[in-house]
Image 1 (cartoon, helix red, strand yellow):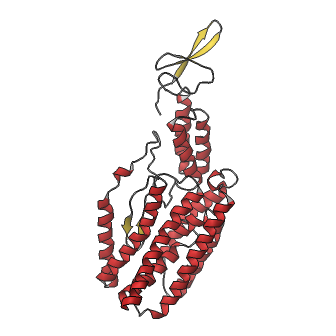
Image 2 (image 1 turned 45 degrees about the vertical axis):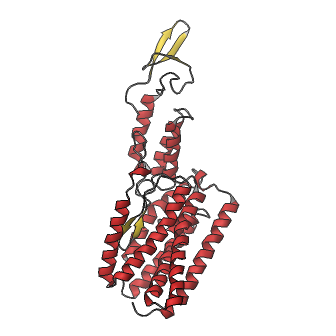
Length: 345
C-alpha cells in the first residue's frame, strides 16, 4: 500500500465532495477506489490498519486477523488485494502464519505479493536428497538402505506435490532434512480443511504404496533389504498419521474435528514417556510438540469466531475420517506383520 493520501475533500456550494488526489476525479460518497486510476480512497486508514495488523501477527494472530478484516471493509470486493487479504486472514486463523511448521507462506506484508512456483529449484531437492542419503548411510552403515529410505520419503512427498498441483496451490518442491524427512513450503493456505486433508493424506497413501512395493519385492526375492525398507516405510507413514499438526495426521483430522488433536498430543506424551523409561530421549517428539502447540492453541481459540475454514460438509468429514482410519489400520497391520520377520537392524 502506498503512503500518500488517496483523496481529499473539496468544498462546494452544495456540500463537500471527495476528489482523488492522484487524478482529480470527483468520487461518489460510497466509493472505495477511484474508477479512473484505481487508487484506494481510504489509503491512509488502510496503511494505519496494516501497520497495526503486521505488528499484531507475531503476538496474537486472531487480533491481527480481525484488523485485516476491518481493512476488507475499506477496499473493493473485486480487487486483488481483497482476495489476498481474505487468504491472509484464513492463514492466520488456521495457524499457517506466525511460526507455523508448514513453512513460511511467502506473503509480503506490505504488497501481499506471492512467490511464484517457477522459483522452485529441482537442485535443492536433489542436493538435499544426496545429503540425507550420506547422513543415513553414515549413521546406519548401509548405503543401499539409505538410498532406498530416501526414495521412499520422496515417494511420500510426491503425493503431497501432486495434490498441491491438482488444487493449483503455490508450494515448493520437497527439501530433505536428515531425521526429519522432508519439508514442502506451502506458500498459500488451502481453500478449506477438506483440501488440506486431501493434500495431507496424499503423502501417506503414496508412501504406503511405496512401502507395499518393497514388501512385494521381498516376497519375490526374500531380500532382507526390501524387508527393512518395507518395515520402515510402513512405520514412518504410520507415525505421520498421528493426529497432531504438523504431521499429516493433524492435517487430515482437522477436516473431522480439530479437537482430535488433543488426543494426538496425548499419544505423543505416551510415546515420549515410554521411550524415556526405556532409556531413550526422543527429541523428535519434543520438536513435534513444539510446532504443534501454536496451531492447536490458535485454532481451538478461534473456534466460533472464524469457522469458515473448517465449515465443510458432513459427507466430506465422514469420507476423510473413513479414509484416515482405513489407512491407519492397514499400516498397523503391516507393521506388526513385518516386525517378527525383521532381523536386528
